[in-house]
Amino acid sequence: KNEVEQSPQNLTAQEGEFITINCSYSVGISALHWLQQHPGGGIVSLFMLSSGKKKHGRLIATINIQEKHSSLHITASHPRDSAVYICAVRRMGGNQFYFGTGTSLTVIP
Amino acid sequence: KAGVTQTPRYLIKTRGQQVTLSCSPISGHRSVSWYQQTPGQGLQFLFEYFSETQRNKGNFPGRFSGRQFSNSRSEMNVSTLELGDSALYLCASSFLTVTNNSPLHFGNGTRLTVT
Image 1 (cartoon, each protein chain N blue to C red):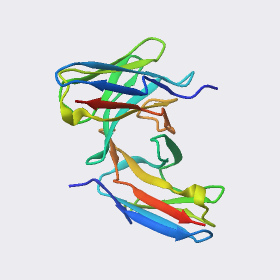
Image 2 (image 1 turned 120 degrees about the vertical axis):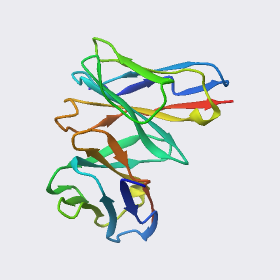
Image 3 (image 1 turned 90 degrees about the horizontal axis):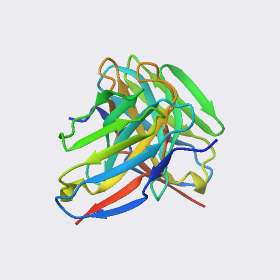
Image 4 (image 1 turned 180 degrees about the horizontal axis):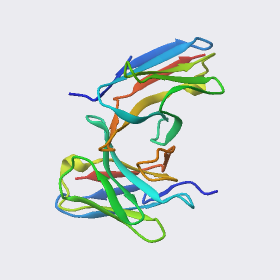
């Protein structure tokens, strides 16, 4: 049983397209993180959410606590956005982290 | 401001040996957490330290241990290495402890190969 499910697993888009990656979770959480991992392994934290919506440049993250669902949107996608995007949740109470399996995004020029 | 530094970047060990990995957090960060990433299991949480105390632990055997020093630097030790321990080991630091969520800052990881 996976506490965190992401979809799609793989995504190929043309440059300029609007992209949505979804994350559903089954446990009560205190926070949800969206992470970006480029080839070579380095991970960058994009957003930390506990409610509502956050925007940073072309990236937007939303969370619906009642529905246990979050989305990461990329507007006007660019080849440099090609990476693996990982959803992670911090469980309420136990405080453990659970991770989705990641969405591999390829943006074609 | 220097980022999170993990050493070494690459490590090759044989089965049965032990290994120690090091993580230096961003200055001022008192929380350090460790993660294992494998192609089969993805990212998994190992443990988290705050002010030299282990605050949280994932579902890993006792062969995996860690500690944090007074300067917030952390080490992770794996004893009696198994082939399945081959993975990328990542650490992350954050400003606050687990009960107060704050963004994670990841190091570049240590890639461990067990032969």
